[in-house]
Image (cartoon, rainbow, N blue to C red):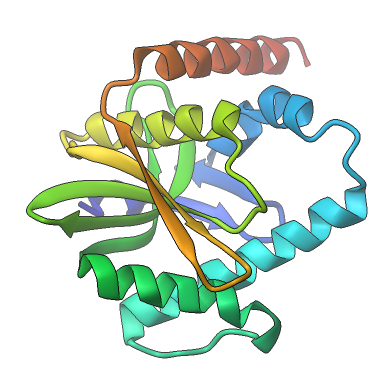
Length: 200
């Protein structure tokens, strides 16, 4: 499953993916028009704190999955406990955590939070620590990741958002595979991204 991540490089400082020296647009970058519309008017400091929280919780989960090591900042402990509760309730079999991937034909990249097996089904999971799930964004994001994996012949049975909450609870929201509306939306956003890059 990790064959397509071996040559894909990620620059943490610039938050850019590159393949053989060629910079690939990220799923987050391509979806900027949607996220800008969703978070229009939200204070920049609030968004920064949310991003920091998300990064810290993601890292704690990655350490737990890969090394069975508990290391989460105290201020985010309830979000981490929500993940542990999910793991206890669903008993997933971990396949891959924080896996960088790209689409072989369309040449965009991203990082998949989790691929696991639940009840015999392969599931692509994205973690959210926001106050609510932004449905305008999540379906498109999940489908973009699923299609990138599919370009390598790696198919999932379904996708899901694991919403980790500040009270230590969680919700696990299932998204069906082959979401044509979300994929068409992402394709349109990718076309715009490529058009802008061409004329810059």
